[in-house]
Length: 461
Image (cartoon, rainbow, N blue to C red; front, side, top):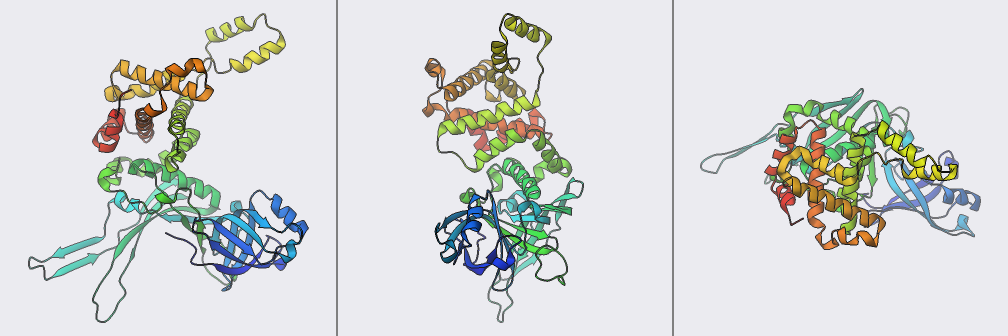
């Protein structure tokens, strides 16, 4: 796990006010939170402005002169009456080690990368070969670093799987040797783009990889390459190397290993369309971002209550269907609405317009049946699919409105797990369609994956 290596002593200032610096210590707490404690704060008028800041940025340098930027922060604790002679504590969302950025939008980077161990198994590419003689007295180990894999994401933008290794230290006598291959996922931009843009692209690609791996993946730091901003001196050549550290939303996902046989689709399985796979995914993400973000956010941070899990996946599916099938009211529907409103006064017409704005759209049950249809009898025969869609819609309606009249139609909380499993698999199937798999191919991959196959048949509906 990449964390701050011990507390960092340094001087800190607000952007544009370097002469009014303060001494303080930056540290990462056991929880992963990043906290800065100043020995003394600024004067009251400055601290009042700092306290009102929505996303505070502080700049600084450590005792070795390394530039540091602290972003997405807020004032946690200070003395209201004598701040200039009392300590102050701040919480920050990110730490940029190696460059100065007045804000995240101004953090121009040419590269953003992270180490995600599960991708080593997903790629399935090794530079190691081992030969063992029959006598087992001779062992030959050879390593040739694999070439990086590059994929176009758009004009001036690439995805790179970069291979590296950690090797043995040379000693005399050499009694042990250790060699480990690693891969980093890199988003590379020429010309440079701001950090938030690159982070958005990176996270959307990570959602795709989480889908293909079959498990949510996480990370807790980035490596970046910045333009000249923040270099220690103008004489330095090349981009500044920046380490970006933050507290992960789901720490249990950091460093997660997933064995190849548990994955939905490995790299070799998407080989036929891998040249445009990642670019296609980003294009589809732009179209359906609200549905994808809703689904993958819940996968990364699974809520505690079954009702929350259920509602979030239903919402993701409903949104996906709506975005794919945006319809306009038919002439007959419009005429019917006009007949209904014909004898109403203006105030009532306005109120009714709001209520009937989406009346031409299909209801949730119809949407779900449409989403289930491409996959044949994977979710049961036509009657089973109809019952599944109807029960899901009734339960969503009850959990949204808590209408006592709908209570008997809703599924009990203790019985929601089979619905959550099937809805999750249904969303995965439609994600596979978005990366150009046919319904038949998508279904085959689900049926070959033991865990997902069991989720489809788990429990009675």
